[in-house]
Image 1 (cartoon, rainbow, N blue to C red):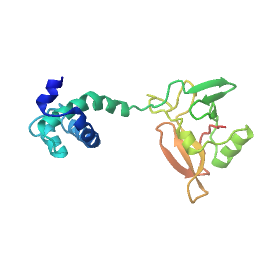
Image 2: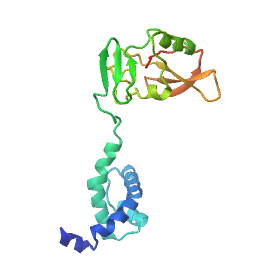
Image 3: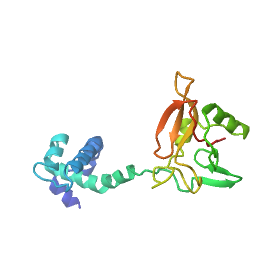
Image 4: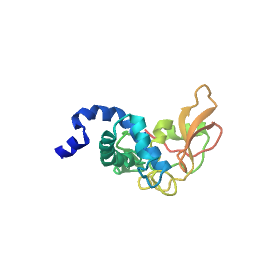
Length: 204
């Protein structure tokens, strides 16, 4: 291995700092090359000449960097794109119609409202049960983009959730007539008039 590094004319230690500085730019270049060249060939007009011009390194240095990127960075790209970043055991069904979110320590109603309500009535609905409307950030935290069909939420912890819009307590800045809501059919966040009728899931 030592002879190999001597042969290509680089020192791993000497190039670590440079590699780290060029890492983000090189990774972007690799992604672009992958998009432009599905076969990902290191052709004369493809990856190697473009990367060499970008990083300003000798061919031997580039080859060493490319090896590191293929072995280390490429697997990280798939991890970075993972749609779920929390454990599957995040939600604990406590009984009595309640679900504990172990990440936020919030307690949610397991079942959504059976009817749609306007925003003032949604506030009263939750308050009367000893709960409150969630903020838009709290409500978005329930969206699960890995669900293949139906409502984008953990369907084991929250069975029967309709793939519909749900009210949040957050008002739009500068307007008392518009409040935020979350669509659990797509994960979309949007503001709407407080007179609109949407589903409700309360929290405390």
